[in-house]
Each structure stands twice: as C-alpha cells, then as structure tokens.
Amino acid sequence: MGPKNFMVEQDARRALLRDWLTRELHVRPQRIEPASSDASFRRYFRAFCGERTYIVMDAPPGREDVRPYLRVTKMLEPLGIHVPHVYEADVPRGLLLLEDLGGTPYLTRLAVPEAADTLYADALEALARMQLLGGEAAGELAPYDRAALRREMDLMPEWFMQRHLGLTPSSAERALLEAAFEWLIEAALAQPQVFVHRDYHSRNLMVTAAGNPGVLDFQDALRGPLGYDLVSLLKDCYIAWPRERVLAWVSGYRSMLAERGGPVGEDAAQFLRWFDLIGVQRHLKVLGIFARLWHRDGKSGYLADLPLTLHYVQATCRDYPDLAPLGELLERRIAPELPRANARAAAEAGA
Image 1 (cartoon, rainbow, N blue to C red):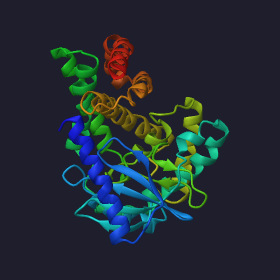
Image 2 (image 1 turned 180 degrees about the vertical axis):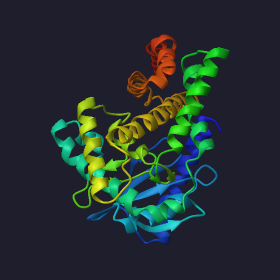
Image 3 (image 1 turned 90 degrees about the vertical axis):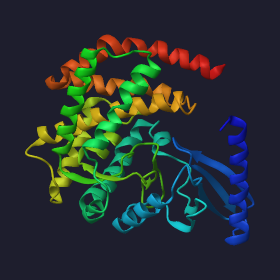
C-alpha cells in the first residue's frame, strides 16, 4: 500500500470512528484530536465531551486485533493495576472506547530527577502486584518460551547489524551470536516464571492523580522471566540512571518481594543476575526492533535511542565473563558503525 492509499485508509478510519461515537454510542464529542501512536498500526484519539474526555483506540482489522488487549485488561483490572477501563468495544471493526489516563507519561515527569524515587516506588508496587497476585492470570498466558526468546534476538543481526549498520556477520561471528543467544535463552528459562507485561517502561506508564501509575500497552503479555519487566523499567531505553541508583531500586524491589513471600533467588547476587541477563535479551531484541521501525516502517524517531540500548548490552557484557565474546564483537565491529549509520538514516529521513 502506497503512502497516498494509506492516508486515505486512515482518513476513512477516522470518519468511521466519529460515526461510531455519535450514532451508535451517542457520545457527541466537541472535537477529536490525536492522542498518541505507537510502534504498531494502532492509533489513539482523545475525544472531548463537555467536562469529560475519552480515549478511542483505532486498531484496523487485518493489521491489529483488539481481542488480546481486552483479554489482558480483564486479567489486570482485578489485580488493582490501573489499566484504562474499557467502556465500549466494537471488536469486528477494531474500535475501543477507553478511560483517559491523561497526557503525562513517566518519561516527561522524570525530566525532573527528584521525582524518580516517588514515581518508581509506585511503578514497582504495581509490578509487585502483577507478579505476586497475577499467578492465575499468568497461567492463562502463552509462555515466553525458547522460540519466542530466540525469534526476538534474531532481529538484532537481521535488522540492526545487516540492514542498519550494513554489516554481514562472518561465519565465526554467526557462531558467536548463536552461542550467546543460546546461553541467554537458558538463563531466561531458569528464572521464576511470572506475568510479564513486556513493555513496562516510562512511555507506557502514565502519571495519574489516583492509582498511579496508569499502565498502557500490555496486550502482548506472556508468562516469562521474573526480571523482564523490572529491567524494562530500570534499564529503560528512553532514560538512563547511574548504576548505583539502579542497584538500589533492584535491591529494594527484591526486599519487597521477599516480605510478601515472592521469588527472590538464593541471594541478592542471583536476583541481580536474573535482572541483568534478561536485560541483554531484551535490549538485543530492541536494537532489532528500533532498526526495523526505520527500515521497514519508515519511523525514524527510535534511532536516537539505539546508542543507549547498545550501551546497556555492552555494560552487562563487561560484568559477566560468559558474555565477554559478545561484548568484544560489539566493541570492535558494531559500536563504531552506529554513529555513521544513524547519520545516514537522519539524512534520509530529512530528505
């Protein structure tokens, strides 16, 4: 589908959305404005209706499916997680009328570093509820299994190395990546398996006056490693904190889980290992996804986040001897190419 046809489709969807609100739901907004978009074909609009606002999700059928979103909403709401309440749903047409959680993501408020401890305390409390109270819900989710973990990491050599950096791995480098990926998979599968949001970070957590944080973008939840959402939050691809501060938050979270009878590992070192190693898996995946968003989908906004994401992988490789070969490959062959690749992409995006 060309850009012109895609725009026509989007305009038709917006007209459908307005018609659904006014004719079928009898919600008569004074105006409808774009609220946000994400890394998928979903779009979100804010409908202004007198003193009240709503969010309308537009998920075009054939490109998106709202059923996983509705299913996970029903899992999280009873746990006391502040997800957007669903007021109305038209599943065949991919339209949802949702509670408006406001327009302030954590990332915006974290620009003031003094706010971090309070915001993260709330986010860690919500995460603990998901992990400790969400056992039954997790049992209904698909597992974050070997195939899923591997499929995600394979995005890194395909989209980040080859498409973005222009590097073709040698046979020795492929073997090195293969060994590293398999080692990381085994480490992930050895962790306690819990409810995993999969994108629990500062752009998907909203600052709310009551029930902070509001939690978004949870429709891809799986049953997987304990450390996954914790590292998504504290080694966020959009904002970085000093290692000492991250370690303090990790330690505090482990203490919270221990007090409530949750899984915390044999000792603090094992818990930190869970956190760090699943972070490598996640960040390798994200390198591939951010590159794919540009090269396949034409979304250049995530390229600026590649250096921090790569830094996280390199830093962890330096801390764990089993990952030293991967770290050496990143240092020698991959990191030097990233500034040039990003400059090329920026020039193309601006053309």
